[in-house]
Length: 137
Image (cartoon, rainbow, N blue to C red):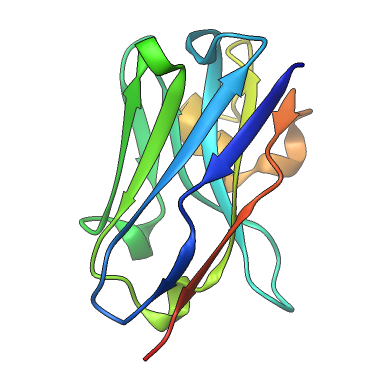
């Protein structure tokens, strides 16, 4: 079955950490640009971090820079989102998604930036089902 599956969400106190996993089955993540998105109740979905494994290009949303980090394990066909210093504002359902490396970004954006900042421009190949992250004391 071809799919993306996220895991690792949960309830954490402010200042805590979580690591989300995005595992692909039926296709290789290396062939795609991978994005982490989140959607809080009543808000639009937003790009958190987008990653191109072919050259390691990464984009982070400003509010998560220095707190979140993307990594990958090719052997497990998995991309991770390490989230540190979590804040209540990080509470959301988190999704991973994959889009073709042929994505054409609007100038002067890079591919990874465009995927995160302008996701509605593109037809995504795969979306995961999402995992809930709740930051609360």
